[in-house]
Length: 185
Image: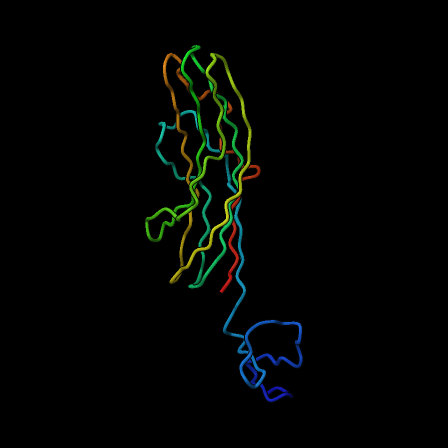
């Protein structure tokens, strides 16, 4: 038992007054109630967007496994380069890079994580290059070990004579692309 009356598996409010965690009526906190958890991973290699079929989601090599049940803040950063070739004037055309998180454990997209990370296009023929980064935050509740994976899709839009196609350099870059989680509860 601690000097204040708390058990060995408890923390006393009197010895840690700056901690704003929930203490019981005796001023003791069971330390095992909340174990902080944090992890992060980086995309191991760039993903070439050029050979991908427009509109088809592709798994990347970036995933994390949350080891326990709880509520977690999930954050991912994606850095993309889109190089679009617009074949002719007239109409409009665009190439987008979209990213999202997928819960591999439940085989479902994590809600509110699908975003357009980058786009390049015009209503004039020519080549257009854009590089961009994005960050997405969401909270996820897990019931046990859960694997989250980043997916990417290239989406081409064309109307009229303007035909868009992705050309070299269109990638989800390894530099600047990462995922992390932090336990909230």
